[in-house]
Each structure stands twice: as structure tokens, then as C-alpha cells.
Length: 98
Image (tube, rainbow, N blue to C red; front, side):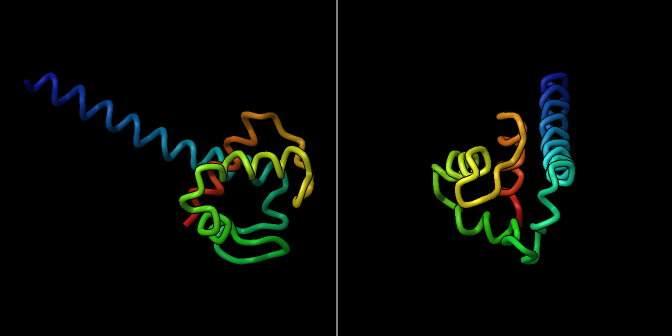
């Protein structure tokens, strides 16, 4: 029983650490791709704050696909030179902003 609890605790710690790493990866990628030149997490710059974007799309099951398409195709937002994986990371990070 103790072994099972230790395994579950270790697994939980790794999951939580992965979430922190994903947040760091999103922020680092946003900086590297120049997103932070026009956007900030909490306040409006040239573009909306990420917390406002997250609030706008909260509960929208198509939010990630919609935002990814805007970034990829340059419709309603400047086109971002990034791989699909990078776009996914950026959009997930933006939608998690508070």
C-alpha cells in the first residue's frame, strides 16, 4: 500500500512539473516569435492581452483551432512563421492566461 501511494505521489509530481514546463515553454516561445512585441499577458498593447483572449474564448471548443488558423494563415492576425507544434504550444499558453 505504501509503495502504491509513493508511486501515485511521484506521478502527480511529474504531471505538475510538466504543467509548469509547458507554461515556461509557451512564454519562451511567445518571446522568441515576437508575440510579446504586440501582446502582454495582463494588459493591452497593440494587440489584446492574453488574459482577455482567454476570457473571450473560454468554453469555446473550437478556440484552439480558430486561433491556430488565424496565426497560420494570417487571417485577422499577422502570419506567424512557426511549426504546427509551436503554434499549438503558443495557442494553449495564450488560452491558459489569467
